[in-house]
Length: 94
Image (cartoon, rainbow, N blue to C red; front, side, top):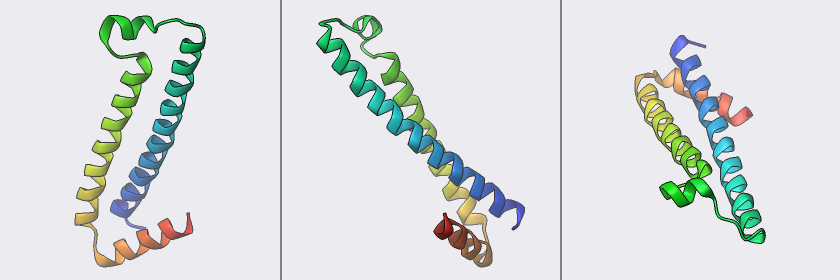
């Protein structure tokens, strides 16, 4: 595997990790909001700033995913057809 193909593969893995993190953060926010409602309590940070710590983490993670998408697009444009075929094979086996 060429260096460019390796970087593309590692970047795609990082994006997949970020997607899993995002899903976990969204789930955690939902559970947190539900628990706060059950306790009839407010999120203090959200009361002060309009966003909870989990909202901020979700936004940050979404920006990271957007950045990784841009990088992946740029990397794919630089790959040869052979490198793209190799990456496609690797992605299919995952």
